[in-house]
Image (cartoon, rainbow, N blue to C red; front, side):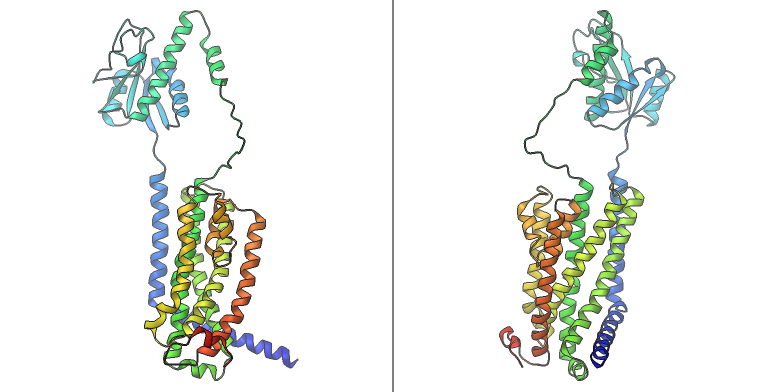
Length: 429
């Protein structure tokens, strides 16, 4: 019973220390401003991406007399992966006015077969007012295209393909054939490709989501990791730690500090993720299923907890080694480097090689996993067993760090003055 009461008291103390850290950080003006800026930045980036990302279709006009060409133009556009919308007007005069008013980008008029008229080269689309290029023997007919100033390369290609198809159908009809039958035969012809080493298709939206998840974790660790070290140094410099350790055990103070700052950091990251995912799904800027997006964010937050626990313990131990804020950079530099390296590798390699064996291997290494694993999970290039192995190794490393960091913290936090060597801090006091 006494042992149970002791454990209950220990957790109560831990909760009090963590609560103190949470209140201190949340009330900080710097934290409030930083959080607001992060939320505004992620919201603005999502809104800008969604508004710019979806390009409007090119608008083409045809007359009622040439209305049968609308399907040919749309089919040609689809084959060239160009977004084209076709509008039908009563006559050429209405179509020309629509071009002048900016309602459409071009008016397409079917040119009759000629012995050499103003049609595009090889019977392709030519422009009117500027006239089309004289293509010599234009016996197949073609398109005359009316534009305000210029047609543009993509629309030129679409109308050229459609014009040639129309000319081909005209020739087939003149020879007594059925253009529809020939068209179906041409449409069903293709190339069957057999890949000996097929590459899985990658969704660009998932790639962006994975890189953003890793990037946010990277930034948050860089912000809140050193905060743990700075907090330890502040208490050590002001001798507050001596008063606290008079009633607390060193591991309770260290664990409570890590837990409290971790809760604040996790709350900030969750808010940013919720705003980003919510706006992305609402505006259509994130073109992936909602379940996939939410699941990726949830896993990213889980890995952030793992990563923060891992690095915060090391930052707390490092902060206990020095007594001045000026010396903090020297002891925290190795941890910052270990945060920086996986992020740089991830954003450098994954966009061009999502299945990189190097990244997948490093994503299992505990110190690299918190940043790289959310990236490859978001992309979808990692197996479940790899995630489980990485998680197990990371938790095992955290358990080791609890003992190591607790020993260093307990032996060094009471020593003021000169910097304590890590070797001396690991020895029993």
